Image (tube, protein in one colour):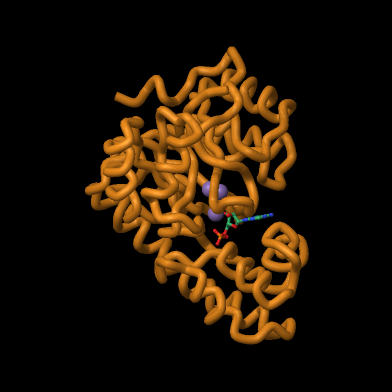
Length: 277
Ligand code: AMP
Ligand code: MN
Ligand code: MN
Ligand code: MN
């Protein structure tokens, strides 16, 4: 196992713990290098860094940007970014305002399926009113008994073709990579195994990502099995991309896994953290 985690969430996006508690939880599990990567949001990073300094673990500023590539939604991690870059901050502010408008449409879609007031319900679960995510809707749907847990909600609602799903235009793929690079960071494709794309499209994605100066892919993440870890490790090598690892922790016992420590990268990978200075 590797005591490094470069992907997790606080309650400034769709996690449930405040940034300092996420850091403390990772530290308690033996983490030595951590990045907080809230969706489209940087505001939790100073608190997380302060707690990491206090506990003596190394901290990296991160973000997980929602992007649209060929009409599909993907997530791009920005690792080791500067907090004061105008291009990145303005870009993220625009993505956040799109989230609010989308959440209202999600509420309308659920209302048509007989679930009233979901927008208001989801808002109660969001600590940060600028980041309303499907996860907040999912927690509300569990509360009203529409499904037994968050995982079950995502089988019946909020995904393409089901009530509560609305299409949405996120940040442009190339723009998001540019914002990350402008802020001095490394751009990493998050959880590639979670996208519903075949091998041909995956190769197109990696080709486009390289052409836009993308840096790496998340080879180890909580929902990749050993075959996927091997497969994405080989693709990283083939495309000359760095490899990252992250838990995608959101909430104790909810989905994905606990933060702080992850399976080792395959031996053939070049770890992204070797590029942090
Ligand atoms: P959004 O960015 O608002 O579309 O919400 C995406 C978030 O929903 C992801 O970051 C996950 O936290 C959560 N999510 C997506 N799919 C699932 C799933 N199948 N089970 C549990 N959580 C999910
Ligand atoms: Mn999330
Ligand atoms: Mn993601
Ligand atoms: Mn994530």
